[in-house]
Structures are given as C-alpha cells and as structure tokens.
Length: 349
View 1 (cartoon, rainbow, N blue to C red):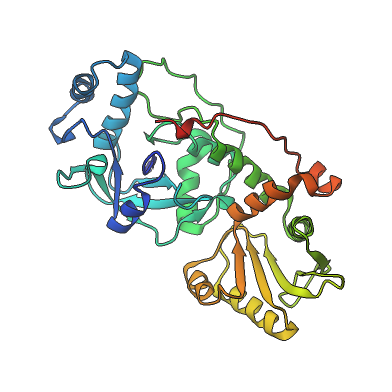
View 2: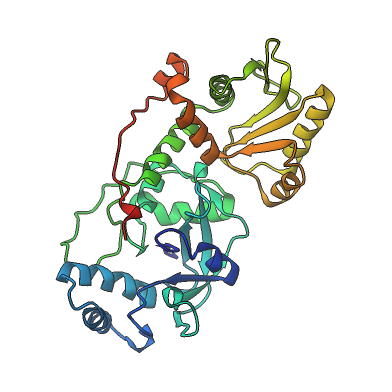
C-alpha cells in the first residue's frame, strides 16, 4: 500500500503556488546542499549538525528525520498533501512521480524537490473529518500522517472526493517516541488559528447540514443588516433566501442559494442562481457553497462577479466571526464559541 505524506509549502505558504505550477513539492533548509550524496540517516544528521552547529540534539534529530524522509522515504506513487495557506480552507493533493532531486538554480528555499502530479483542483477541508484534519495539522514540514487510517482515507479522497472516516473502533495513538528520535509520523498538532478554524468548520459541516445551514446564513445576513425571507425546506427554484434592505426589504434585493455539500458545486448551480436573479428582478446574488466551486463553475463565476458573490467555507467563517455576538441566542447555543486572545506562533520567524 502506498503511503501518504504532508509536505508544507513554506511557513506562510509562499511556495505553494509555485509548487503547483511547476509540478513539485519543495522544502527549504537552504544551508544544506544536495542530499543525493546521503545514503543513510546518519549522513543526513552529519550535514544538519554541520549546518546548524548551535542546535540541540533534539532539534538536529527532528530536522534529520524530515530531511531523510524527503530524501529517502517518500516514494513514487505515494500521496503528497500540501495544506494551503495561499487558499485557506483547502488542501492540495498530489502523487509523487519520481525520486528526490536538487535544483541548484532554484530559489534557495525550494532547491530540495520531489516531482509531483498535483490534482487540478484543491480539496475543500469541508470534505475531511475532524480527526483527519487534526492529523494534517501536525507541526512538522514533512511527516507521514497515519493515525486513524489517514493514508487509506486520503487515498479515498483522492479517488472519490469523500473522506470515509474511521473504520471500526477508533485507533489508539501509539506511545510518543522519545523526543530525540528522528520520527516523522503523526507529530503533535499545532494549536494554531488555522487548526481552530478547521474545528469550527467541521462543526458547521456536521451540525448544520441541509436547511440548517440556510438558517445560519440567514442569521448572519440579518446581523449584517438584511431582512431575510427564508424558503421552506424542499425544492426552491434556486432561491433559499431573499435578502434585502430598507423598510420593505426590497432595496438591493439579493437572491441567496445555499449548498451545504462538502464537495464543490458545478457550473449549473452558478447558472441557476444567475437565472433566478433575472427572474426575480433582484440586484445581485449570493452563492454559499461550503465545498467551493469546481473549475468550470469558478470560470463561469469570474464572468459574473459584478452580480454574484460566492462564500465558501472560509468566507462563511469570516462572516460568522464578524457577526457572532449579534446572532440569535439559539444559533449561538447550537454553535458555542468563546473569544480568546492567543499568540499566533506561526507569525514568528
């Protein structure tokens, strides 16, 4: 069975789009040259110790494990997962197609590379269940997610776009290895803002399916100053919510279509909303699509951006946080959040 690997595209996602465009997974470690000369983990450790003489044995071990995995362990056919910071709420999936290489002419922070065939479209995190998202939020640049059948499930996501979840009893995590071990399996998750958002996103997907999501969107729009008329459950002709301003709720009339499915919607949904805007004489439309848009739908939407706006799960989260204190008590009880100030360690150099 093939393995699955997370390979991040830079602390701030600065290498992600380049990687996708050039069919590579890349990592930094600029002071360390070509790893092709290394035939063992000890060879890599020697390079790390020489390049970072002030690092502790623990730090040397962690870096050695990641570099050796990138040099030796990731094999052609393995899945590569790149959580995206340049497009929050999504992960890129690819398949390793060759062996490690070193490109001396490339940017110094992406000279170490693996050839990867990336899927044309990233996968919305709404597809992934909470435990798998937590595993992918491990704190390393390169690691193998394996807890709770992660590799098997990621293969299913690759093939079908659906995370089947755990099979059987939840897997018990193996004992944590000694901190000096060069282990790159299931590192602790980073308690980052991104990880917190992922948990809230999953809660919405699991707790606000179907018409419940329409109700949540209506509550958010009401808090933003709209008067909302929500269509009853069932066939709605492409109109889930009529939202407007003014004393009669007819100013800047907005037709809203809500799609709770975790997979991306197709071009016919965009066309249906555009048609509904024309039929009703509305000023504009809003498409709330938890799974985002597929490529044809996104292409069509780009031509209609003057009349249609799209909220994917990431934008919905932003609007939720913006309006949360003004939402109805029942909605806040169904989605209990508490604001807290935290240090975003990912912003540190």
